[in-house]
Image (cartoon, rainbow, N blue to C red):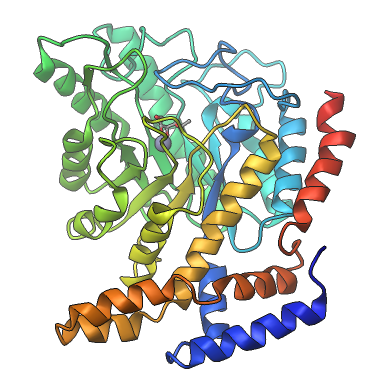
Length: 421
Ligand code: RNT
Ligand code: ZN
């Protein structure tokens, strides 16, 4: 039985009173949560295949599952993204990979792309009032040297990928100007070895030299913040990753770039929520790839779990919303892909809203007074405050389906569109 307007209002009134007792202004929290941008990754819609490469995913990452309805063309992908967006409230951007270029019959490769190959995406973003973020694609391409790109021993390979890295900054600048908002560019390179590397230093020197070339041209950092994404290991790249955590963070700090924390790129007992305020002592901004690893870097759809909540608490409670670009990074081919997006994006926004609603002043007061029992008690009480009722009201006012109502609509889309592919 689905909820009606009267029930939504009633729930909201009750929630407002509960929060007000803690001194929390519910309407102000909604406004704050609504304005925080979340970048939805385009690659959930087609199992990270893209339109310009080998047609097979490489680079130590993989999708599993064969649910019907994968988007096969830019038109299908945009149609699916629009369907997902109809279920998602709040400020949203689209995070695009360079492999989603539209060549329109032209012979042109990743080292020479210009805004021309992405004008379809730019126009679509304008029409839909969305910002764009961007990623060079260092995988699924014949110029990859195994899993190596910027740190390849082969000069022509490095050169090709350096040019690609440069082009992506230029394209991002066009996106930023065209949409009148920053376009963050995330650099992730899978470069590394399956087995023990002897010359660990040499590949890092090559990587450093390639990155230095990519970032040599002065491009406005406010409009085009560039970031390095570190990684612990990939599939078939288990023993050595050139752009590891220490490498990427160090390079970013020294070269005034940004750093991307991906939830799946650390040892399973490490949490990126614990790293945010630490790395922001040394960096102006960071990017997040919010993901969910199940036993390993499996990129499951993000659930509304403790770590997702902790990430958003860290951002909002520390007032970091202008310094953290929130992006999602998961790819599940075993379920309806549009629903995967909607589940993950709705969860991200729910967690942001809950962070904005939390009685942090009271919790902080207890901490300052060294009353750690009250701090823990309040943190636990917070978990059962009625943020769900506020979420329902928020969805209602934003014109997106309340509660589970979106599932039926998504299933209709599956029946009418996805299942016909
Ligand atoms: C891979 C990285 C990277 C990719 C995307 C497709 O482990 O997380 O961010 O998932 O670029
Ligand atoms: Zn990632």
